[in-house]
Amino acid sequence: MSRRSPAPAPVVMFDLDDTLMAHRAAVAAGITLHMRELAYDGDGTAASVLWHELEEQHYHSYLAGRLTFEGQRRARARDFAVAHGDELDELAAGAWFDRYFERYRESWSLHDDALPALDALALALPGVRLGIITNGELDFQSAKLERLGIRDRFEHVIASGDVGATKPDAEIFRVAIERFAAATPVGRAVYIGDRFETDAMGAARAGLIGVWLNRHGAAHATDLPDEAAAARVAASPVVLEIAGLDELPALLAVRLAD
Image 1 (cartoon, rainbow, N blue to C red):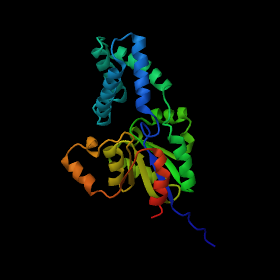
Image 2 (image 1 turned 45 degrees about the vertical axis):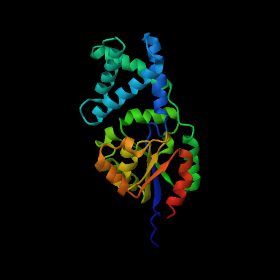
Image 3 (image 1 turned 180 degrees about the vertical axis):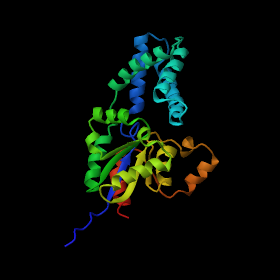
Image 4 (image 1 turned 30 degrees about the vertical axis):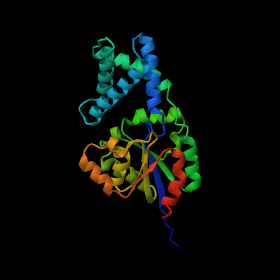
């Protein structure tokens, strides 16, 4: 008697920063603590906004290949320090960022809805397989998952630094599905992230069900680069929207039963 192949199981994958982990809150806390240690003058809220803008600017330069991972860290440190009257050379910028990073890491935490949502998903979708797709370095992002105590909940962690492709490139989503499929057949696949274009639309264009986690009630257009992108969004039938991860289990229970 031949053995029957296992039935395809649903795969649900998540972005990490600002989806499961409260990245922006950790950044704000970390930079405020670091400023106090350095005795920089200035408003903490304004400093957090500037640091976030520098992160977006220089991290995207890293993703585009214009800076190394360490280079984008030092560039952020130099620009922030200059804005507060402090000039740093390369070595000093590296040390500055390392000190900031200690404060940032101390502030890591999960969003309040993350663990309940993961537990509810397991109940709502028996046999579901979970994963992470993240832009960044694999060791760094894996360290976050370990420190947050959730690494063992995910079968695969796919990072752009390991794959050589970044979201929203379809290649990183293809690699993720391929890794799941190497063990047992994959059913319908879902990806959840806090960025509309990079996460939800990137996943949808790659053939997954894209779910946009819109915690702050942002308009779609804030994440769109041009009118052509807006037209692609209007034509997409597979992007879903939730305001919190607590909405996800019931949504997917219905969606994956279709």
